[in-house]
Image (cartoon, rainbow, N blue to C red):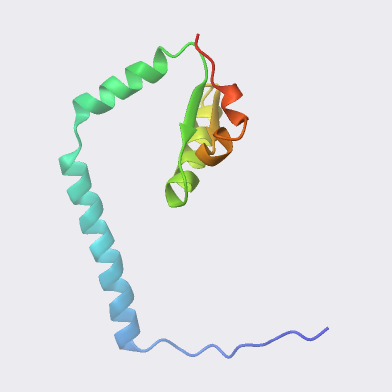
Length: 101
């Protein structure tokens, strides 16, 4: 079996600067997002989840589907019955997991 070996080059100061700038841009974006949060909406969402007596179904396609899977897993890990439902599969029979309570 052959293993490819890639030579690592030492980053130059320009590359280091680019990395630092990218991280600073992300930090600024997070700070901006934090100042724009609607805390009342967050409180309402948390109240809805706390009062949930059945399963939480999360759905999405593509990148939003990846996020939806993560949300469903996180909700499950904090004790809420939750699952990810691919909307394309829902059209082909998986919609049965959704039932009126």
